[in-house]
Image (tube, rainbow, N blue to C red; front, side, top):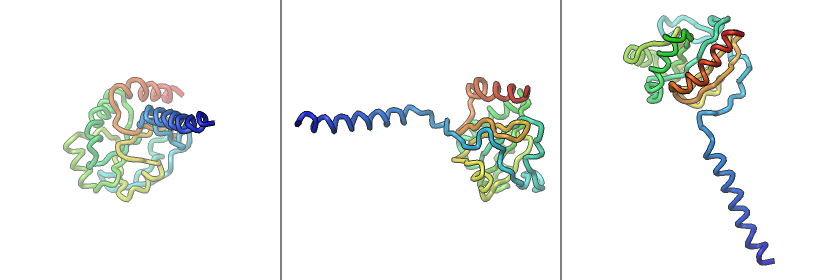
Length: 176
């Protein structure tokens, strides 16, 4: 009987260790989104260049990337050259969503780092980002020709993720 009582804490420790190990081995960039394969949330936001309204319907019939960024975001600076390359070399239209950022700060940041975006919209209150389930910047959503979210990436893109995941998916969606 004493042996069984001594074994219970050991089994509990082993079970907790297994769950902890599994949790720590997950990739934090792979946060599942309930929006995958569902229509992207509808919105209309002011364009950063002229303040006129812009809505995703403008991209109908195209595969495009919605990239959430902010001038305050250090990881966005790291990701920016990769996005510039994707837009320039692969012709993927990228829509910038300036999240919780003053328009003048966003414009200055883009002037300093370059502007790979087909259009940039301002989401100062952050409501559209909430609709997309954004956790933080940068975050990106690949949207297909019919306006459905097909892929979500949390954190900065790097060359390997672009080459092995993003671009093959873009090519497949363009062919559909």
